Image (tube, rainbow over all chains, first blue to last red):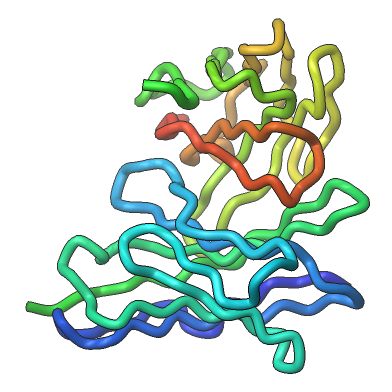
Length: 113
Length: 114
């Protein structure tokens, strides 16, 4: 069965320290994978996407994610957190050859001054 | 600005009332979607329209109807609102039906049914 699991419901970091948001996927074949960010009372904004080209994907606002097939993971990282990064982040899997998009449950990122 | 526009942004309904949520996109996308977002449950697909003239049920379609009015507009109707439909509703669009294109989301409609 296809699934997307975000391993942490909440992550708290200090401003200026690295961010790691973890996402695993389950599938018999590699999906396209996305990270979206949702700031309070806003819609979801696409941060980055992986579609079977380069395994290291760079997105907006200094975020990047690495697709690791052997670990079925697509973790989101940023070297240095900023207060404006505080938001909820969704990992999403999309399966080609059909129409099925699976959203992870979300990870809320808190950034402390 | 190009994107997905949803109206209204906020709405309070009484149980049994009806209403239509409007969504329009100006990116010439073929596919459009309605999601609901509830605490602890992520986003769940209500209905989608792969292309103009077609609509299909998603994961949680009960209590809703949709209309793909034209390529730009995709509306969601609640015929008889229930408290269980209190949620934040998001409209999204993508260039094509294939899921690997990614979505552009609207800013949401916060609906409360009392």
